[in-house]
Length: 155
Image (cartoon, rainbow, N blue to C red; front, side):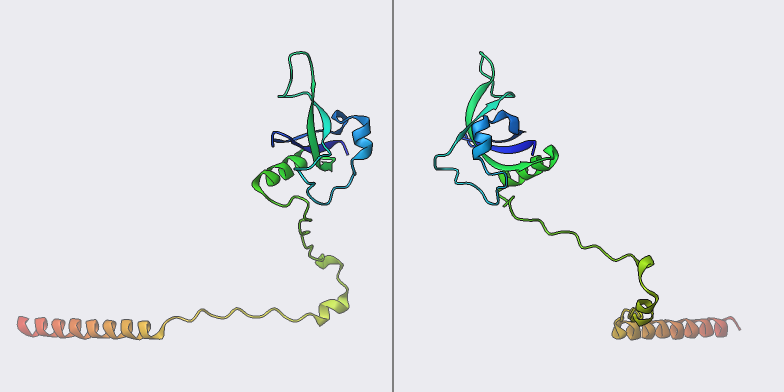
């Protein structure tokens, strides 16, 4: 594990290299952390922080606790953001389900497959259709009456 998420006493959370811990702290700290350590009790280690926390006379050591180890810096940065938002970063995320490849199915399996269900037609409101049809018929009658009355007036 090359990187770790550090929780500092000033309640800031940063991702940094594991080499910044002293050798004693590296040996003492468990490599697999499955839950959030108690952030209020003792057990702080000293981390040599090179960026953003410099003192004028060189790199300084700051008290911190390790929240998680990892090989990918970007993954730990995402976990850090989750921790800041209050998420449980130690919870295993659900794995994506994989769909079996259809090319490799046995011929027997294909014969036993149930045919896909047909999609049902969407039902429309019959009352609306009937009222629309009635309106159309009424308009046709009115136009026919009007046309016949106009033709009788012309003669």
